[in-house]
Image (cartoon, rainbow, N blue to C red):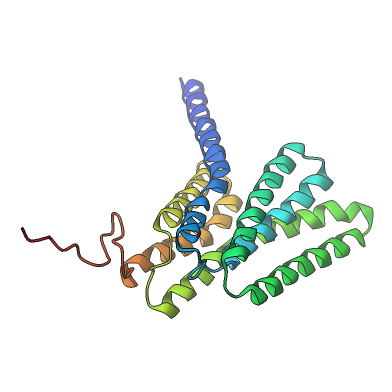
Length: 232
């Protein structure tokens, strides 16, 4: 019976792992919520592009590592993610008012990635793959910077008016599922890797309470302007 129980537990965890993998893949479509707001407002005001640039940085590092390591599954997965995030970043560039700063940020990202590429390729052949693997793993923590820059903008403006509640909530659930899966699989390295992101996304969600939007009410939390009943 003990073996059957363990087998049942493993099948549940495997099923949950499949769910998390699919949910993480869908994450690449979540930013469409933000893009839709830009299209409606014809402006990307209030959004920190660093959120996208840091994800692009992380994805690019994993693409290179997957290519060097000969892992076609990861290569296609991260390659797709990088393509989607590049598209979202380009749309931001179209709708942002400060295009000069946008070009500077893109140039900085390309410069950093080029420097990493040159550094890794200059290493002895037996050190290239493990070194790139370490760089890719560290780059994952860069995703924490996205919510940080977004939170800074919200606090600076004193309102979460331009912050997408749907995207924030979905990102939180994605990171939370990754964290929980790491714990269930006994992989504390993975769990701890997602812990800072989980904490930062929880902090971002709290901004809707402490810095409510000015023209719309936040679902679930209920902050924002009060609805006024029309008199007959």
